[in-house]
Image (cartoon, rainbow, N blue to C red; front, side):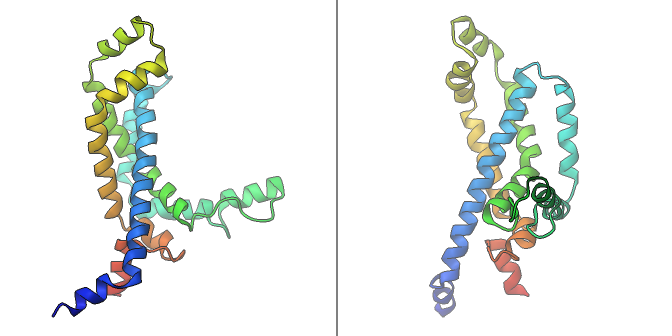
Length: 200
């Protein structure tokens, strides 16, 4: 019968999980895209020192398993024993930890930092495929760097931006490590962690 569908979709947990998953995926995709695009722009459109090493270094985090990255951030930002929180509390005499990785913003941050190399590599390819003479023409016409970025660069990147954001959004929805290691202890459930709990 259709009773199981009714039970699943009428459950309040279904909608709370949907909202959590949507916020997690949207926030992570947006932050990842922002950080990756800034790094790609610095690499391809500026004379930042040592920028030639950015691309080889960006490949290294893609090799590391996501579980390791999540555990590392737990050791850094846990409200009980996180190294960063303990150091800041001793340094400034704080009564409570300034950061809490076991929260929705903490989940977004941890997953975003892990995905930045992917966004960076895709945006580097997009910048390389663009014709730099269009940006040079804008600057020769009197536009400053910010105006050129807003009126020329970002508009040329719009198709790539949509594709990269979609990829990052879907990869975040299907991710398991961060929702499991950080979300479950904080009682913040996404679809992947709910499926895991249902099977166990």
